[in-house]
Image 1 (cartoon, helix red, strand yellow):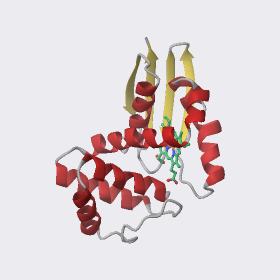
Image 2 (spheres, protein in one colour):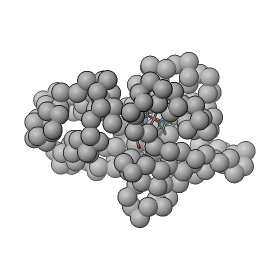
Image 3 (cartoon, helix red, strand yellow):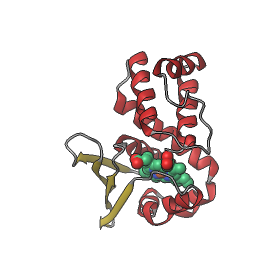
Image 4 (cartoon, helix red, strand yellow):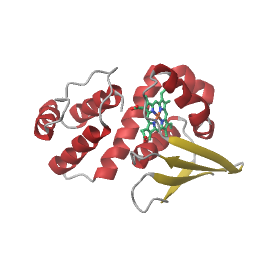
Length: 180
Ligand code: HEM
């Protein structure tokens, strides 16, 4: 997983909790990388999971909620880095429909070793988008956080429900988005 994802997670812990907590979590996890992440490096995604598990233990928050919140934080970062992309997409349905074909394709060009999920979007009606997430990393809650942040960003009356198709592994999940 790209170092940028790690640096953003640590930044979120610093902002929401404290610098001391972020440092102490990195130390407690005894990570193979030592926690010295660079935005351009690539690290084992198990390190990300270890940090989130430790954060949940220290704060009493639930792991899925923390990963979801991290999705919101990442969305803000993407928005800051790529304002034109979000203006061009104009809404959540368009953004999600272009994830696999355009957005993550661009990411792959920048980082050939990026570990990206697969998304399949299907417009079931003008007001219903079904989106399936597939990734062995099991970060469907991250996807959910990104989707919710997108809906908030575009101020859309969209409700989201989800169904885990991978027996709770969060690796294969269908999201149903309904526009009022
Ligand atoms: C609502 C829109 C988006 C959703 C739902 C989404 C979803 C995800 C998820 C769940 C992952 C984690 C990897 C995995 O699960 O296997 C991921 C990784 C990533 N995404 Fe997206 N994404 C969105 C938009 C974007 C945008 C706009 C960008 C940047 C322009 C972006 C860049 C990346 C990068 C750099 C990674 C990390 C790849 C790696 O660590 O190797 N994503 N995305």
